Length: 177
Image 1 (cartoon, rainbow, N blue to C red):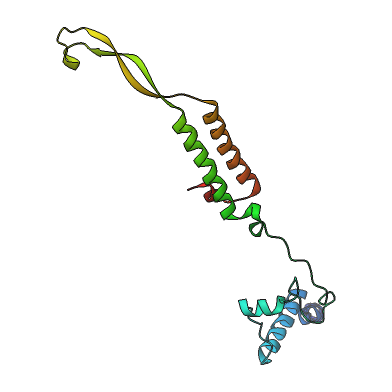
Image 2 (image 1 turned 180 degrees about the vertical axis):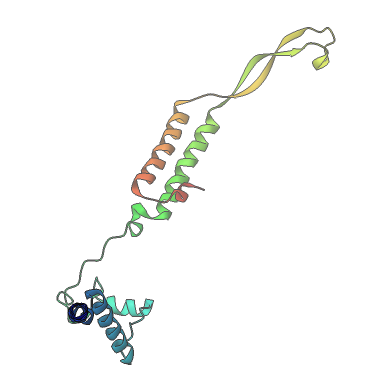
């Protein structure tokens, strides 16, 4: 029995230092808990709330928002140029261009209609007032749309304008009426 009690005593002595050490994860969690409690106990340590007014005041005269005392806070950064601010990217500009292109298409379509006299098959089987059952050709004035070069160019211009809008990053709604 003395050897068994000696073995238990040695095992107990070896296990005590291991149990006394904390794991690195537990130590990190304990430090974070202490840091949060310390931050909560300070009255003015709450995170600042940024509103439109505070952002406008902070960026007035500077291109970027930076904290005081940081290097580079005194030199203003150039404001990024926004495409919506430029004439080529503005909604009004694109809507005006599309309105003009649609107007040209409307004029070309109106000019492409012609009056023509064509033979039309009428009658047969009591249809059209003829009772003989035979259909006959009658020359009638009809209105036809022909594909003119101006109409083709107006359609191509509208398609090209839509492609230009897409490539420039404009919104698809700007092309609608």
